[in-house]
Length: 333
Image 1: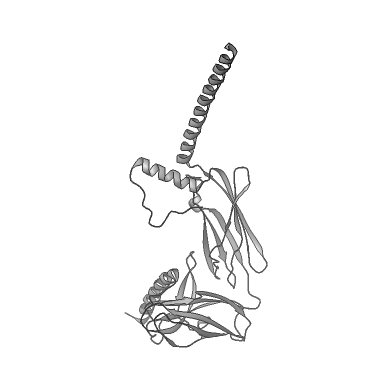
Image 2: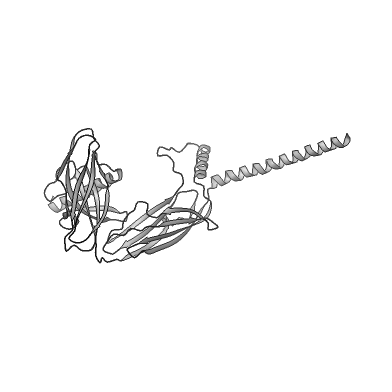
């Protein structure tokens, strides 16, 4: 196996491992805070920053630092890590090892030295902490945790961003209940990251505001040279993770009725996306329509309404008869 193929396997494996550990916030024994840092500076400037490392194990552990540049991978915003032969991964300095007792936490300083000839715009790297030392020229494989660093070098960076589309997921129009999932996509051909910010406003059949959703709840960035897809869900009530669907038609029917009641929505709705992005504050807008009809809940409401009306009429008739009889007896007396 040649070195190029071996290195590609190493990078692929570490990308998978780090992706899993970023979601959980831990890498076996280690927690890092923060997990993402967004900073800016001028060419020639040295930035001083810090992070906190926490050993979650009971035993003493030694952790080793390493660095990697990263770029966007696919439309999910997941980072793809590469060996830092230049750029931000080579501008960062910190201690090479740290030993932490079980449950111990320490603040670790690090610096980012921006070269005087650094290109304005976005530069992206990660400080990794792992349980094994690195081999020369390789990104070590093993249990790792990393701090994502997104640096903007001040200057005249190119801005070229395109809003691609906004719709419901799979362009679905008819829903029996919430959630309703929306997605929109941006393309960034500029020199720095962009972060869309703004609401998705949902209006009911008569166009009254019903709900306002954060269009970027994870504060995700779109890195240069990439397209990113954002997904936002409208839901008011979520079942517990250990929820098990009941067996049997009637039990499942009533479970669905209860869920639809907690997530009550019925009729024609519109969703309006309005997000700002870029240094000039440009806006991307889009509108989509969809229909929600919780038929199980509506059926129960119709039946209950019928019973209430039918029972009410019966009661009114009985009451009228009672009044007439009483009046007749009074007349006789």
